[in-house]
Amino acid sequence: MTSPLVEVLEGQGALIDFSPDELERFVAACNHRVFAAGEALWTIDQKRQSAFFLVDGVIERRIQTSLNQEVDQFGLPGVPLSLSALISDWEYHSGAYTLIRSEVLELTRDAFEALLEAKDPVAYRLIDLIATYLVDDMRRANARLQEVFGRPAETLRTLRRRIREDAKA
Amino acid sequence: MSQELDDMDSESLEVNPLGNLELFRGLSAAEIREILHTGERRTFEPGEVVFTEGQSAHSMFVIETGELEVKSRGEADEPVVLAQLGAGSIVGEMAILDGFSLRSATVAAVSDVSAFELTREAFTALRDGQSHAAYKLILNLARILGERRRRADARVAEVFQDPSKHIDAFESQVHDMLGRLKKV
Image (cartoon, rainbow over all chains, first blue to last red; front, side):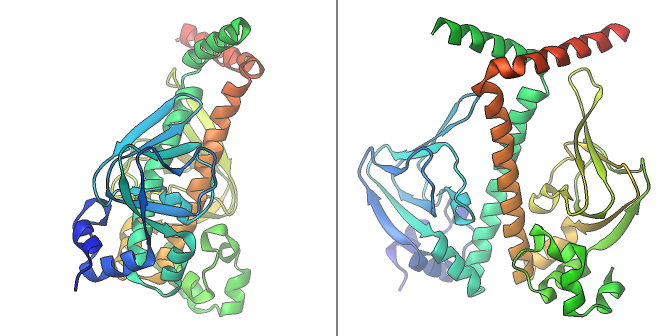
């Protein structure tokens, strides 16, 4: 019998390529967690050891960079968050908070590594997702580098402005 | 590459310079051999271009010996050297992870270079066959990419954490750029 969580997630978002059997094993490897509105999935600078997959609700993620704060909201089932935590506990200067009561599946790095050790195709599907999201992440980091070092005149203006602002403060 | 690897036993593969790379961390000798069999060794002479900025990207290179230079077009369209890469470095890795992408920089040999080239087509065939080695390699690539992302963000953060420390360098760059534009 298909579990209710599998029914919700089948064919959804980043999990679209998972077969029903794979989804069953994926759900079994995860912890089902419910967060009240305004609760944090993780906070800024916190080292993370889990990825999250939205089942129901709305989550806002804020990434603080030197240039700005990127704010994204996610409300569709199957959306993955914090995938990089499955391979390392890099600090991302980000936080994620529920805007309404939300249900997520939490996959710990240990559980992911156990799937990989067992050569479970679910691990391969997750690695495909990690690759896609990390490439995107790297592109955005390259764009930030290009914005700062590739346009020295603009960066010079920004630095002068910040020095003036710091002096005023 | 394949014949050379056929002649290698597990022990000799462990001392092969490519076998010691972070890219192959956690892979057994047989798994490394499986990956290397799908690629080929390429050699480049000093000055020879490996790939050009804007070209469609379809393979990654692992430098076995020699040095490559990574260049991009700057604000005044002049070539800017972004990095010099030596033995053990990886270049163009996004090409085998991503469905379609363009080269973001030009890479050329500075000295005689021997490199291992892995095409997206060959690597995709491994992935499609659910090769455990291929997926372990992707995880290692993801670790390498993640670390590069962290360093890239740290470089940007450093500039803005202490603007007065970096303003001279940017003033000098802008001054040089204006000088070059005047010449044109």
